[in-house]
Length: 496
Image 1 (cartoon, helix red, strand yellow):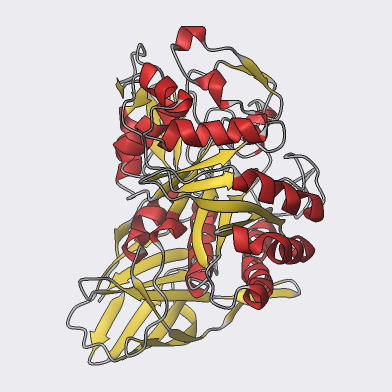
Image 2 (cartoon, rainbow, N blue to C red; image 1 turned 60 degrees about the vertical axis):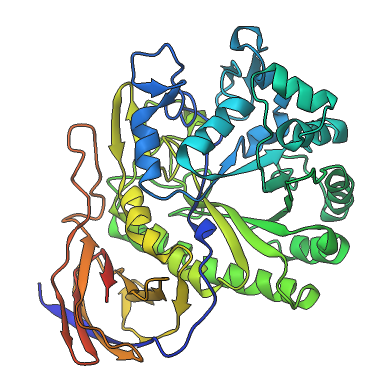
């Protein structure tokens, strides 16, 4: 297909930006639908190959992403979760009703020990979210002691009695979730005081320093950020932000994950680009109270949210994952990179079988989604130094709306290799990008691309490789000039 437009780019290897925290590529696994049960956990007696109950295929796939951090147990579930119900012999653990997500019985077979075992198998940092909504200060205090204390104390000895002698190292601890909504419908002034109280009793035990994350705003609630920074800023290490991408912007009728018209392709990408304004305005508030940028912005829930797959439990939030989701992930990563001086972590919702999942399972079957492939492609940006890019792009227009056709981000890793990631949002036309390399003497260029023939192309158990990375050869290097032809609706990663 001929290129309908050209874009120009200057990649400034002669300048450097902030380091892209590897935790920007973090994940989120809630007790919701089939994310944990059937997705991550099958139990040690399952015929599905597993290690101590954890699915081997899912663990291997997540390890390949260099998964840096995993948030658990919620989400809304966290503020109904009482951690002591999830320890000890599984046969003795009391069940509960998961009132938020389908009103199913939660048997608590997957608890603290199982989650920490998963993190150790993955080599990933645990991010635990504590119960403020229905829990007590003592309950949260004791959980931290159980996890991280090496003393001869009641909770540490209880942990030992359940088979774990050494304490775990837990850095990231969230004090409540969505306290403005499902976590208690609190006012920011009230939550700020509750945060101060609960955070006081999350103790640092020898060898373990907590990074305490306060519940932050829902989307455009800038007043919440203002109040929390003003009243609790000195006592927090991170402040969260939640924002989901809906094609229609209407919660009651979000739109379909597949079979959608171009108008919903366009509105989804336009909506997800709103993340830029949210970050600009929330970080500006944080900058006033914390000019040294000590406090991290933690976007610990983000991603696409569609109407659930027909025929599934609507409370399980199951949805397919298409090429459109791949572009959403890449566009958000580019935005996160631009705010890497303030963003310490993000966590896509969610890891398996829920919302914008990396992996879908059905019994013993497993399939990787287009979003998974973007995470795998982009892992080269983890802990790399961001490099400024100066982009002049045409626009992709539909009706009376328009969005940038090209998005770009660059970084240099510890080995000195430069990576340039690019997105073409136009589903019809390729675009030529003329790139000037400033301060980098490239000798070779290699690349991979994710694209497909249709906007809603997706992987199924019958066709698991419909959308997957392929070698990219449409980049030509001549001196300090790089000519790139981006296919329609594509994500490209180049290594210089």
